[in-house]
Length: 351
Image (cartoon, rainbow, N blue to C red; front, side, top):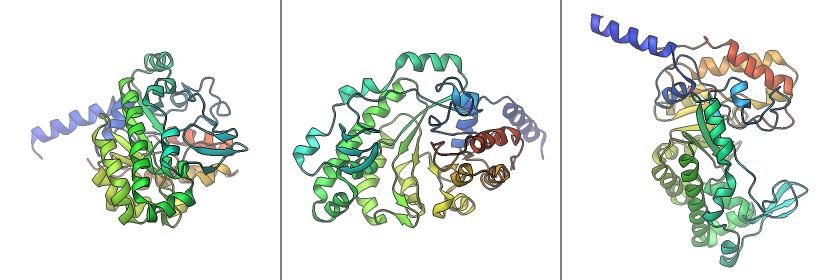
């Protein structure tokens, strides 16, 4: 090895030792090797108090995460968690999503709020205060406003899938309306400082995609491509289920990465990294099932597995395959974050 190359690698090693959380995330998104695997738990709001955190806005930093979720507000008129039909045409019963109300063009017009209401989603004061308290962290914004999820919930799954076959034009109009809303929200999030966006757009069950890859290419890929192209920040796609058949189109859409990688749905991290890791940063794969049980050793084993399988060569950020949600064992969730911190040095590098 020549002297110049040795000096370059020494400088690179020194830079890694002084990485900020923001630099760590950016390095992973660029498929390079950070000083340690970034911790990128996106949604933790269900258990922040049970995990010993005094403020939901600061909880991710308090739990050692490199990302911070941008504080948001519940939009006025939203019936989520209650009863009735919300402003998107989603029907809620007993606090649980039950069906969709959109069936006609008049329904679509009625249940498509104006982008003028987007300001009600964000609390600029809380966002500014959070950025001031944690200036080196990566500020993210994530929400399940992807066009596929938004459209299926607005119409109801049965009606949506039937209309795909007999009235694709109407479905396309609904997808376009939801894409416009997503873009408007993402633009506002970026204006307020979001550095990475997470597009929640659940597309699959345990056995594969909800619609065929051909239909996905025709109907959903153009929406995703437009969201990525018109948003001035990296976009990570989140989906539960087995989305392996759709990952080539995630690459075509231009997503910076994919989040979820649900083990229960057969998303094998080794295989996904081998086949798609050159083009997509991989985020997740910690099995949430172990966080619902009492076995803390199983939690540690799961963290070790994900780090061992995901970290070689960079381009991986550790998180659950879904979120920290109500019903989890708080002790197991706490063990997840403890193990992530304890195993900082557990990274296989290829320098």
